[in-house]
Amino acid sequence: MGNKSNIGIIALIIFAVAAYFGFDKTNKPEQNQSQSGYVQTDTSKQDSRDQSSNQQGLERIQQAYEKQQRDVPVQAEGIVKAVLKDDNEGSRHQKFILKLESGLTVLVAHNIDLAPKIENLHKGDQVQFKGDYEYSNQGGVIHWTHRDPRGHHADGWLKHDGKTYQ
Image 1 (cartoon, rainbow, N blue to C red):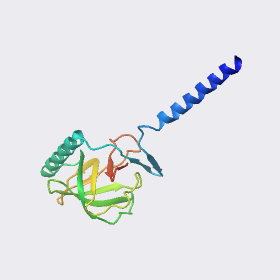
Image 2 (image 1 turned 120 degrees about the horizontal axis):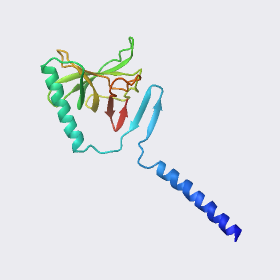
Image 3 (image 1 turned 30 degrees about the vertical axis):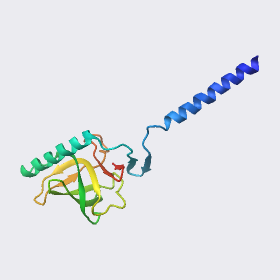
Image 4 (image 1 turned 120 degrees about the vertical axis):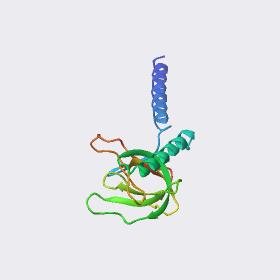
């Protein structure tokens, strides 16, 4: 009778370990570490809340442009109009121009010393973003599209082809 209870305990332990590892791997996005941040694979579908956030973000950008404002937190999306050469002076930045639904164009300056660069970015690609808007007479600049290493500023991000860069 002692052997049967030992086998039962061992089976219970094996089941618990298997359940733990099976549960641990579900509902978690795939993450690929990089030396300056991470890339997260986004498996969720865009829902009505995302579309509402996008519309609100586009309205905030338009208002900030008209009022020539800066340091305006925004979240929206656009289509890549041009991919520019990386700025490697000082803090390195990946640069590209997005055309927004409103027709306004914005320069995205994504700090690649603090966050991974979007590889394989091409004209016509869709990019979602969360960051700060700064007015310029050409349309504006979106920056702070990364985590704040000091924790004093709201984290931003870029999303492209189902991956989040921050």
